[in-house]
Length: 186
Image (cartoon, rainbow, N blue to C red; front, side, top):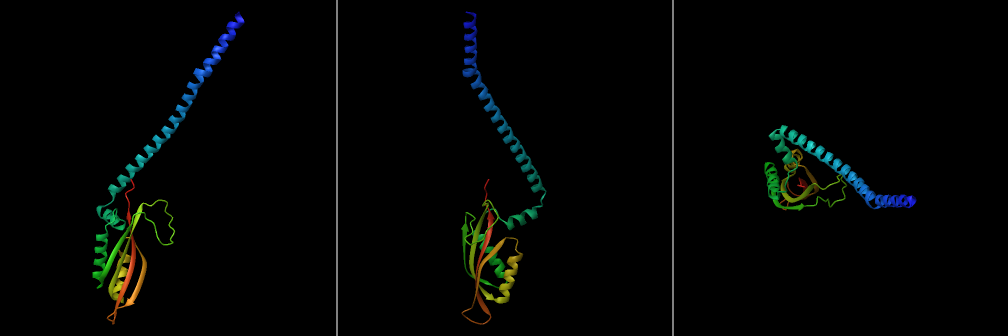
């Protein structure tokens, strides 16, 4: 009888371990893994918050004029009208007349040409500006130099030069320019 009671107690103990203790132990182990992951995520969030605070502090230390220059370098929005007006001012300073202008905004930041960029994200958009100018060759060279010195990042895609219908020293310049703007991906 003593052996039977001992065996029953052992069987009940093993059954209790298998059906009660082990599932709870596994659940606790899973919770510990989750806790470790959550602590890692919390540490990353704290680091990101610290980095954000450092960046905000650095931005506050930048002079207002420098911020305006950075915003002109790569604006945060695509304003086609403002862009065309900006190039019109440059052309007027160089005695060139804009005869036709059009702008196309590429929301995806994809390049249709075969250029490869070492950029993993498309945090930028591309505006392609096509326009025709009329004027002398020297004025056009001055126009290109002004574009080169301009703060806004621009890439000249295509350029064609044709003699003017009127003849003389006048030329017709067809130019296609890419310029960039930052997307708000936050």
